[in-house]
Length: 215
Image 1 (tube, helix red, strand yellow):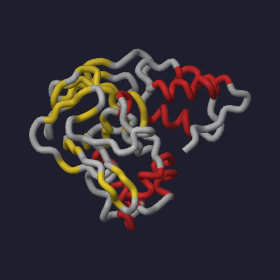
Image 2: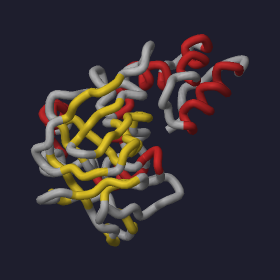
Image 3: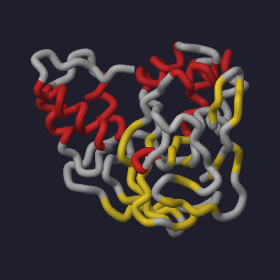
């Protein structure tokens, strides 16, 4: 596992903390994220339900194969992740899990919903839809117990709620062309799901014509 943090700076006319650099040694985690990691646009980023962003190291090779023109930027840190994790993906991580990393306890609570910041970083607006289409979104973590982590720490699954959905299943249900109201209703009740995703799923489950989550 790699740990990465970053400071907000002006890049290409935009103020962003997207770029993350490797962090050596222990770093403490609190309810709003890792110490020393900044958020530029707090209106849509950061907060307790986006405290730490984790991404699968396993995805980078596939991204390079699909988008060789972006190979120079498709390297660790290329998606602005705080934790780069090998061996776990959206299919093996579930909403509501309790993962022990170092001395901190964290909980996946939502997939990443890509936005214009991703498009600007790669100078390619198509990368937003690409992340939705291929499901390589990564996931946001809540900090359930403050503590510290560092590069090389092992991840241990301590708890998984009964009936938990994987990050991949949440993505599939949310971005389906014709979302299933029953699926959305169940999704809205998932233990540990971020409040904004649960509220959206609940509204769409009651809609006459449910629509996919907007980008």
